[in-house]
Length: 346
Image 1 (cartoon, rainbow, N blue to C red):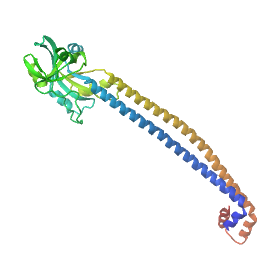
Image 2: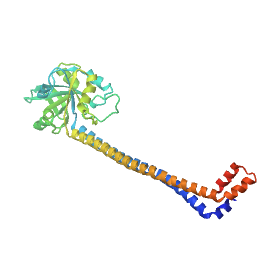
Image 3: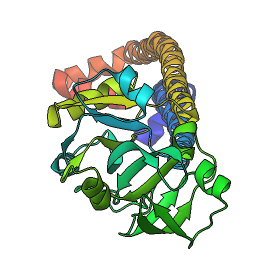
């Protein structure tokens, strides 16, 4: 009966089918379009994030290599004298316990690395009739919670000495030579290339020997460290804040370097990436809003039109079947059954 009805009213069936199909297709297309738009937005953001991460990793590696190459850039000195006095003299006359560096290393600190305790003092090199800065060091103290890293300065063995550029160059000394310093003989372990005016006229011996020479056992007057290449507006403030909670008896100096310029470049790269991400999100949100608004207007219009068209076709079908309805009522068919028959055929 249904197939016969379709054959009898081909045009009405075709119009009704096309109307319903158009409404469904438009609704599905609108939803699919928004879904694809969202996927495209996520793809753009993901690409930007991956690109930024790669750039940041490269910058971090460059900063880390540069900072290690330049040496220690954070100096911790005992409180008790002005920073300008320490800078002018080249070392602090105040001392703290050598245990302080171990306390710092075991604290879980994150803003500095490569801790190197030292005891420095300007002495007269009697054999050479010149004044030098004599620095006692042993080796870097590893930070407990960090993986072992290659040291910036190799440890010094007892009975050995390292010389700055001006000292070994002017005296014609080379690695392995015997050096006599105030009646003590040392083996020259390392000669340094030109670095800075302080280091070029300095000599390094083992910390234990320096403490004995200066009659200051278990004392140091500086802790050298390498500051982190963290992305921070107030980098030195963060270092000071963390260290002062662990060692309130020290004051901190940070040396500027080209590594700081690279750190600033990394910060700027991060800012650019965040701004680019915000711009993409804002632009895509505006475009999505317009698409959604257009779909929210168009879809109801099409669906309403389809509903009206189907309603009209159904109404026309019922009107044409009034004689048939009368006949069915006359033979006792209920209103519900008549409605079902008409709706099925419609």
